[in-house]
Amino acid sequence: MYDFIINIYMRFQLLPSMTLVNFAVNMSYVDRLAKLGLPSLELRRLHLDLIYCYKVVFGLVKLNSVQSADLFELSTVTATRGHSYKLYKPRCTVNVRVNFFSCRVVNVWNSLPDSVSFVSLCTFKRSLMAVDFNKFSKCV
Image (cartoon, rainbow, N blue to C red; front, side, top):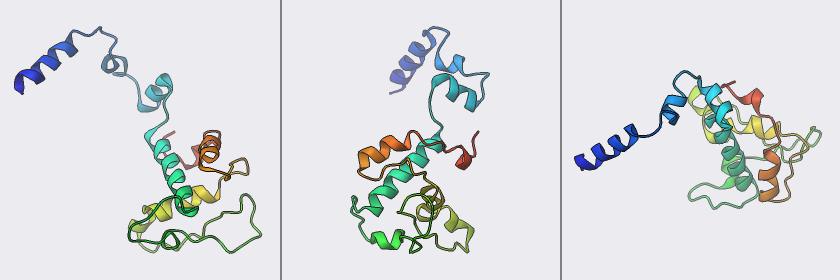
């Protein structure tokens, strides 16, 4: 096993000097993401949270021990702007609960613009790509 690791290490040393490690040495995280054309981990997590929220709200995922009504409750207020699938945000009295999935995704979900399509999961995913989530991102 030790020889295998040494062999990989030696092959890595023989790579050209423009490896990813050398490429990203003096760049910040945001600059590296921009140069490589990648979204941040925070943005990827937000997209996946919204997709999973869609699956729960529309009953596309089977939850083992919890009902979908236990995670999310549709808002009963009908005089809201935006889409008609607004979620009720429960009051979080403990700071730990703020980071739970069912609490952290509600603000983002409720602020989705009218341009987001709720017709199917595929169109929802596609329309999410056009939304700017910078106001919810801590990493600018």
